[in-house]
Image (tube, rainbow, N blue to C red; front, side, top):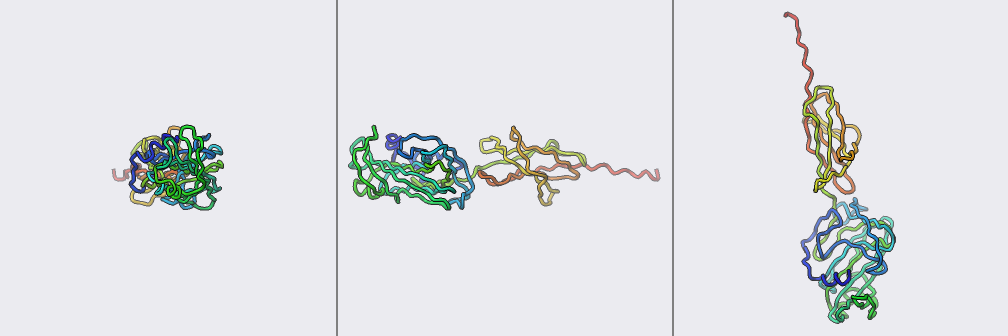
Length: 316
């Protein structure tokens, strides 16, 4: 990762378009993306974490949700990678929250005018985040322990001591590089949001879902049941199987829930039979979840045919 990342740093085109909303860990940006590294060393042993979208926790820095990271063990730090053109002016930060606190680490690799060919300055800083609120971790505010390393062997060539990125640039000159700041070294789950780098700020929010309704027949005799199905899909058309609540009303009346929440079957469809005595509008309500806002299907009208009124035979 080290040599390839340094070669790419400062050469790719960043989006640089302000705030961008993401619905998962993929940024689509070669200059800023989520990754994971070793906690003891940048190229140390790692295990891939899981990820999920969450409401909060606490009050999210941007919007209502954030990206939750679930480590699969200790010793791996997960978080954003960010390339930069200027060590002196690096503007990379990430907001972090962990209900149980979390331990992390930040690495910087940078090439300066006085670093010999095939070498770079490697900086490492421990970063601990306490429970109870969101914490913003900015690269420029951290003090790193710096070592000049051989990029091929990672062998240390010279020690520089502790300094911020700006202080190192003042001593050795400015240059490009990258930073990786990650958390979860202790195996505790955490959340990230408001990832800022390369002119963009990434806001993790919910996915867009579509809820649809269908009935087995548009008209029924009074007292008979209609079979109502509901389906929730994401953008690509995949059924998500979300739990749904059926709602009904007389045409133009107030919506009210019908029965208990309905679980979806293996085919992703929610099903319920509803007896009707009058013409009724039906729709599905999708409650809010960790990964999506609430929503409703379009309504469907089922016409109820009333029994014929007997004709008075008197006078015939």
